[in-house]
Length: 216
Image (cartoon, rainbow, N blue to C red; front, side, top):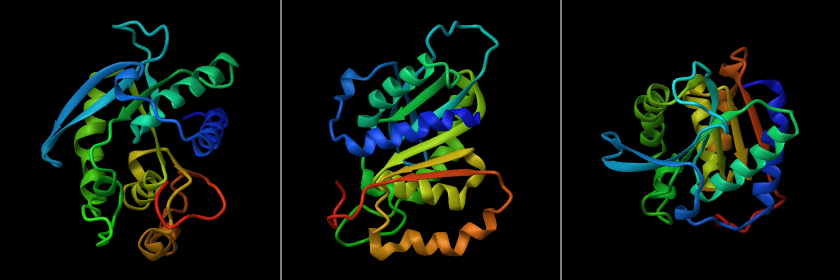
C-alpha cells in the first residue's frame, strides 16, 4: 500500500475509535459473498466493496483492506471515499468480515471469563489458507494487503503481525484491548517484535486513555 494512504489509515482509526454507532449488516455497501471454511468449520460471510468505476475484465489490480468487524465496514468505506475524493490515495478493495464470535476469533488465549476465547490461531490460519487466496482468485487484488481491527480486533491484528507478518503490508490496531489476559499480547510483542526488524511492515496503533476492564 502506498505511503500516502496512511493519511486514510490514521483518520480511519481516529474516527472509528471515537464513534460507537454500528451499521446493520443488511445496510452494508458492496457485494455479499461467502466462503465455506474447513478450518473454522463454518460458513463465513464477507462484504466486498470494489472501487467506484471498476469494470469487470479490466487488467487493473488494487490494494485490499481487510476489516474484521462488520460495524466498521460502512464507516471505513465512507472515509475511504472522502480521502479518495481529496486525491490523496488510490482506489482500493475493501473486504469486511461479518462477525460470528469475536472472542473466539480475535483472542489468542483462553480466559474463563470469556468462554469461547482463544481461537485466534485458527482465525489467522483461515486468513492465510482460505480467505486471502479466495480474494486473490476471485477479485482484482494486487496482493498488497492491510488488516484493520478495533478493540479485541486490535489484539488480533497485533497477533497476526507477530505470527504471520508476510500476510499483510500494514497492520492497523484501533484502540486495541491490550489489557486482555493480564497483558499477554504486550508480553508477546516484547518477545517477538525484534525478529521483525527489516521486514518493512507497518504497524499503526491508535487508542483512548484508560480502559474499563471490559471490551467496549
